[in-house]
Length: 366
Image (tube, rainbow, N blue to C red; front, side, top):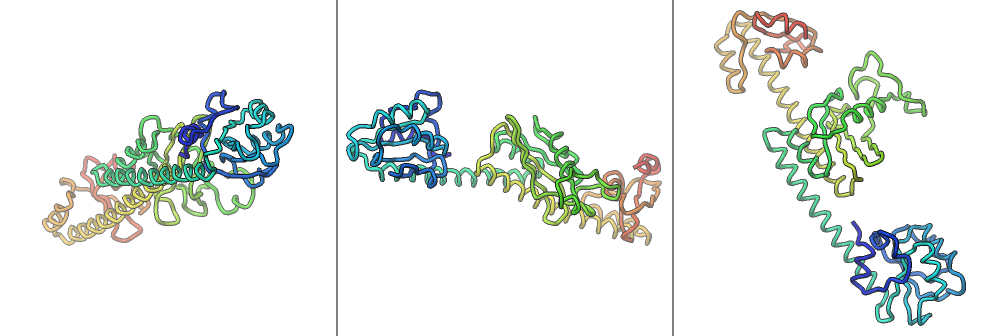
């Protein structure tokens, strides 16, 4: 965060003259220092500056000048005495007090450039500190990703880094893991609202309801935005898709009562990269395991049960106990059957599930 006006006042010994009695007046962030003798410098300001002037052209009522500065959002006005004016004009003091603009007297012995250098150094130090904090946070997230819990550990760590909550959602928007206080209902509702197709993107009409042929975000003709940002009173949420392809492999969301700083956004993006990498690695491992199970099925069909069990043993797999029943289903049922049975996909469009005789009815219902 940029240095506060209070910090600048203290470091270069400026004297507050007006507009500092209201609460928080000196806590305004100083984003830069500008020097101008123009009657209206606001076209050259962005807001958040400490404006310095010697009042070279100041005469008479200054309420209009002060009003323009307040409207532009300057952090404060520093008036250098001993050049054009031996003291700060009373009309300027009166106008600043009435408008609540912090007015600071700059002593003759304090050059404007010294104030500019101070603010520049403080900003540079803050930027360095932000980069350091971001690197440290990324290191903690990386260590979390290496833990056995993997993606869940990253989500838990991310919640601590942002000072709020975090959640991991699957490809269809189901909540896979969330930290306490996560507003997952708002996240899933937002994803549903933004589930749009190319035709909808051409106009401002509300998003259409999902069509029957599309059951997951990012599938079929529908697409998802690159990210979502939701803001409300005391609540700020960011949702990002996961996966390296055109179709999201899942989503993650973070939320907090405060707005996210640039450093926090960097940390959030780093978490997204780690989660995407973990999910892609998981999918690669899953493809390899499916290939092994297909080979095991072929061994079983060839009557090589002993070799089939030997192939499964190194990866912790096992065949169901005899007697075994073989179920055949459409390949689309693979994801549902996989956690509940030994599955193989030898033909590409048919999945075979090997289950114990007592589990047939329960698995078939899936």
